[in-house]
Image (cartoon, rainbow, N blue to C red; front, side, top):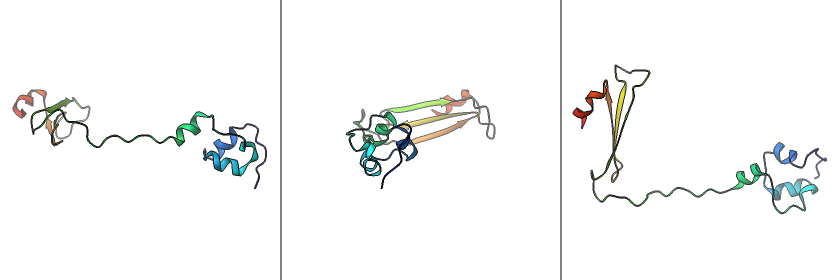
Length: 111
């Protein structure tokens, strides 16, 4: 099977959805002499990215030794009067809690 000449060598891979070079070589002789596709989108689309590690080395050895916290708000939309929320995450166990607050002054009572 052969393909008709295209106006630009890059046009055919674009129209076919950036197939692998081996498939392009079978479709048209125009690509038979190429060793590597030089177009960024084709190369990046074929790249295999390394996965993130499932667990990193922890900085703590027990529950509640390191707690990450964040207070967010005020939200433009309130739900039942709650406009702020506090998140607490235990680094060791990855256990988390979310607390809803109507005002920031409630923070000390939650802690």
